[in-house]
Amino acid sequence: MTQSSLEKQEAKLKQLNQKIKAEKSKIEQNLGKQIIKTSNLDYANLSNQKIKDLAQKIATVLNHESNNQL
Image (cartoon, rainbow, N blue to C red; front, side):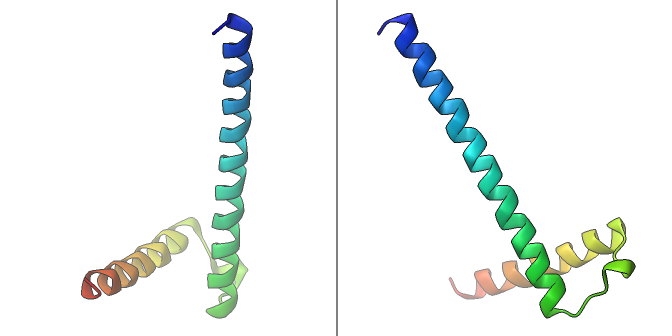
């Protein structure tokens, strides 16, 4: 392959990685919004520590359910 071809592939790879990162971010935001909405949580009461605690509780439940399905 020529240098130009490698550079083009590298540019495409960088662009694809940016798209993946943007899609992950959208999923994370949507998941957070849905959890807040379905749990009737008040944004005003969500400190960083409370968010971390809630995330840990959700992860524990999901991991427990996942382990029971095996």
